[in-house]
Image 1 (tube, rainbow, N blue to C red):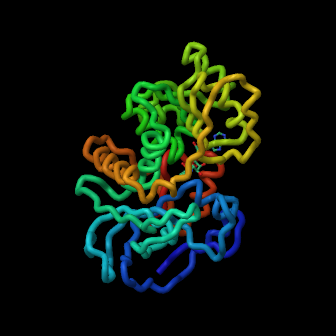
Image 2: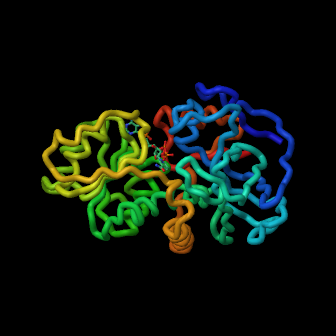
Length: 333
Ligand SMILES: NC(=O)c1ccc[n+]([C@@H]2O[C@H](COP(=O)([O-])OP(=O)(O)OC[C@H]3O[C@@H](n4cnc5c(N)ncnc54)[C@H](OP(=O)(O)O)[C@@H]3O)[C@@H](O)[C@H]2O)c1
């Protein structure tokens, strides 16, 4: 069967289509025939080997899939052959025609023990491509906004990279919490996408200084909470965009890691970091899964915005690196 393998860190051409044997299903494992494999920024960073701690190669990318259960090993109770499912496969290998999802407990880099896959059955009215948008980003965004940041309903929030995979889900989660959502993006098309998801105000950061805009929208006060997965120079600008006793939640650095000088702005602020692994084995994550099913019932549902053949994985990665991707993009084997 076909799969994508990366033998050494580097540019998108390292994503090589290879033939691998169809995987055996062991105890506590199941085999999923992949219909859609999600592509996310973490995959790009891991391909370059700039994601968190260095990892080993060869590496089989792909942490989230939607598809059909092909085979079930002993000890897997909740899912049967033929079930339509969406799954987080944190051990990787989702860029493939088939992937093994193991339900064995694993220890994550943060020391948290949790199941390496959670395989979720899909309601009949939800397509695999729609569910793929939610399985990782919606649930992590829910946990970050509700459990980690505990943002009260009605508060104003700033979302950096709001048209991206994670940012678009965060926008939806904040909207559902009745927050005033100020969305940052980098084109008119991305701004329109953010508005379609419920952003109250959008700003194209290529046209000027977002801090001035935030102060303008919030009558000089700043937002109660900034969610920053962009990093780079923006982390050091955020204290000026957040109101006194506000919070900055730093959860990524697509624009690079940079220094943070908290005393340049004379304000009381909280800077919190977020690592999703810390929440995997918690009731907060269970609550986020329930919220995902509620969103499925409520609709309208987000869907992937672009599909690429499995063999075109390099083009998919390049679209993220070039800033052309909007929302969630996926591969189809
Ligand atoms: N901490 C955690 O546990 C956790 C969990 C999940 C995700 N994350 C983080 O969430 C972030 C987003 O991930 P994703 O998969 O959603 O990626 P994505 O779909 O590629 O979204 C990235 C967003 O950032 C914007 N962006 C990229 N470079 C930028 C720059 N130089 N200046 C301003 N904006 C820029 C992109 O805008 P354009 O479309 O205009 O390029 C896009 O909106 C990443 O930092 C990822 O590591 C963290």
